[in-house]
Length: 384
Ligand code: PMP
Ligand code: GLN
Image 1 (cartoon, rainbow, N blue to C red):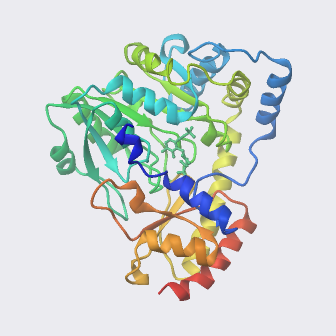
Image 2 (tube, rainbow, N blue to C red):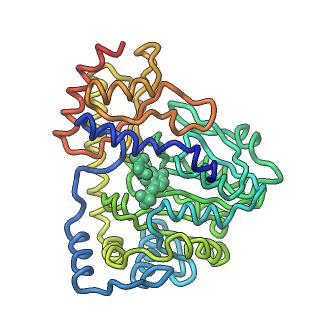
């Protein structure tokens, strides 16, 4: 069997959610909201299932959704995309990432990534025969410098994989760092696969800037979004891809043999949802920001050192003050002994992990957050 997969552990999200089920824990691990998502969007999917076309849709996505993606990114970011030649729909961002990596990375090409790294990237880079070159980000700001980039960019660099807002750190990359990275991409003629699934989940004072809008990057970026994150419907798995015709043509060749198409009822609902008024997106953000603040203040009241969250469904705590315990041991004991699931951030490092940071998901209703805090209050004394 292929050792790449035979030797791969089950993803940390599945592992922690299984432990949460087994121990009837409050699941603040895997990122999904308690909120059922906007009813009108779900109604559209139901209507499309009952009264719409349920056979294979077009491989690139239904025309309404491709138009809607172009209009959406035009409205929010001033991007001008040709729906026919520059947009594609995939079965989740996960598929889009795999398609982009398989399409862009040739055996022996060097690929620049930032760790903590979202867990699907590295196995897919290796599958493509790419050579990972890792920049290590550290708390509390998780930023990189030009010296970090000098250390990883070489004449063999072909692809950079960026994630902003960044999961698991909850940070949003500021314009100056996007511009710095863009200057390296341009100088090395590299393509940027830009995972922007959290583009709408950003909080006051932190605006998401798509890599594609940075000078020099319009035609060398594969922009990836996820309807699951935009509409709090993480099970839907509808991915949104935007790229220049030259790049998209090749990414679509990988997509055609990964899933080929994506359920048309969900596509119809997402096409509708992306056209919702600005107020929908602002209210969604405000709701998550309230939950972020509730969990942040609750944790601080318990004495936890919270690393502020600028976006995503996640905040992080620094467990160093608790003493010797590392993040894996902390999360294992937290879920099995105290009934709260969390994610150890070292799971997102391929080498030299940061071992004192734990990710908690706040996209939950107040009762869930308060119950989690109550259990954490009982746990904290016993973990020292
Ligand atoms: N990239 C990042 C950074 C994510 O956080 C997630 C899911 N949480 C994905 C990709 C996968 O998105 P999807 O569910 O649309 O496949
Ligand atoms: N991306 C989600 C998270 O970070 C989980 C998605 C998954 O389970 N693959 O929690």
